Image 1 (cartoon, helix red, strand yellow):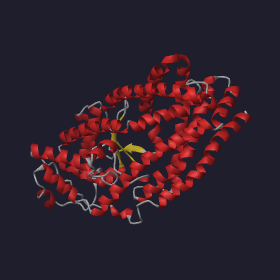
Image 2 (cartoon, one colour):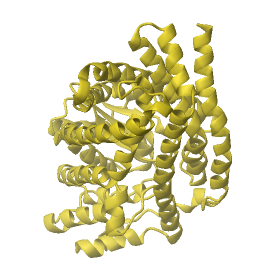
Image 3 (cartoon, helix red, strand yellow):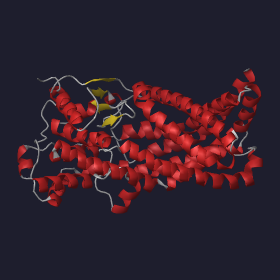
Image 4 (cartoon, rainbow, N blue to C red):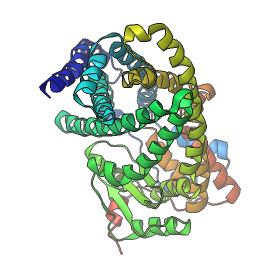
Length: 464
């Protein structure tokens, strides 16, 4: 067993040593970030008063321009810089993933670990599981410098993070532990299937991956999310009553509304109506409760309830069935050629060899990177449908528009058409506000004025 532990440590240590060289790159990137110390206070939108709402044009286009005009130049510049920087981060994450795969394929720690595991652990599923966990750990260590920059340094520079490094890193350790467990399970089941599937391994691999995805969707809200946040019922009052009534009126089978303490990590507002196969739950983060008015909360929750009522999760799973099957088919073609030309040098016996996992993940990352506009468009179409549902069910077009201004903190407000197709997995603020203003123009309703009172909606949660 000491030989096994030494092999595991060498495998992860090799990743750690290689990560040291990348640390300088991450530090240089942080130093050249466009965010300065003023970034924290740059994003501030003055609340509107009753006179501003009264003067809002009825014409949807003119009203949308009036909403966007409330964004100060400094706030727009900060939002654009943050979101556009994310385009480069997508590229760096993709490139880093390929580098990690190349290092594991062209150096010996990966295959040496496989050999030791298979000698010491006679039962193949156990050796596959340990290899999968080690692979997840090695990938995490290799990508840690970029993760620190992207998830900690950059979020603090733009004023959206609230944790100190110790708390943030503690959650990263929990994340990698979960990733190791999930990757061990995935590797064990997938490679057991691949060894028995023969030439049609890609077909059975796709089915297995989709089945595991469904299991993850069921387990995540119940067992994984509570590892990072505390969930508790929203206090009895007007917010809980309004949200619960909205949920029940639209067929969501819940009897309570929950809040979670996202403010311990971020300033972002968010909510979700999550769950699958009987695990539905309506959840708001405390930032939304503390920063938004009741009309905004109604509009946001109408949108989230729309995802559930319109069966978006089930529809997305069917769409992913097609995409995952195509990705596995491409992997079968690509891996056959790559292993024929490099398999001997990589010391990999075939697609059913667990040491081929880095190659399989690299091929999948290429598919995901190329398919980014397709994936974003799929999600964006569902978000548009949920926006229509949300404003129809809540009848709060002003609340919807006000909430969209808050999302500009981390999402560019007015991108170009091609930019939105490629990079946006949600409609832009301009499109979403225009949609709400068209509803207002045609229906002749504005809903309640989303004025920001001195005490936000969370304070009203306990009101009778």
